[in-house]
Length: 290
Image (cartoon, rainbow, N blue to C red; front, side, top):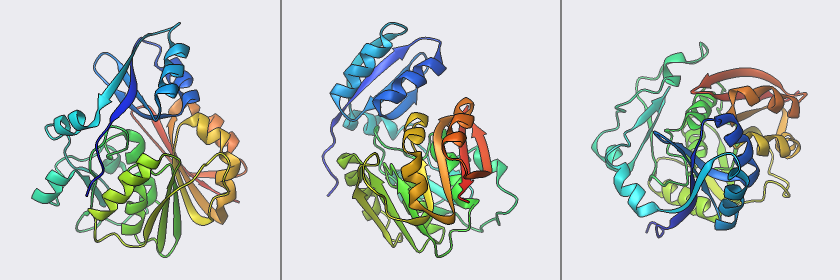
């Protein structure tokens, strides 16, 4: 049975200095950022984090603290969330996956595939139950990670997905040929969400989800590590993430704005960028560990 839906602490922010906004909220571990018509809605795992972020933003922005019912968002999302396809991977909500395995919307990332990729005659469909707090594949950073996974030969490799959220990247890695995929998150709600999504994808094998504290725990080793986090968290945890990657392995990084790319790359030196892409002002990187 799917877990109980809940309210999520969030803030609605109005103001023009988007770069400043992202720089400030990065320090308070946001779980999701939703761009809206006249505002930005930022979600947090706890009300304390939400309230601290609100106080930090109040001097420069109009900020309103709210609690968003997941049930209400999930119900409304059925009118707007359609499948999304990036290369071979189609991510679909349950109601769309039940109707058809064919995606009805192509991501702009999909139209710029790596020349090394071979087209697939059919999409690999992953069903994700929408939740406001965890990725559905529609955000640019998730799409960039899905594209990056397909720019790497995952056949028979172990993939570690740090900050797994809905689990979509770990499940995509398994569908793309990984020998095993491990999704880690510090949020117990995320792990529950990922495990429930895994149950909706019986064709996905060799995937596990577990709780872990990225800032203090040593991570299991893998040939490929994905981390769709904020730029501040990527920089802070770069030594831990680098330590989890086998020699000659790769890191797939996103969650950073394009103008944060250089600072993130410096934090992961001497790993070198071997693939990168931008979409909607966000950057996705594949870095090879030397």
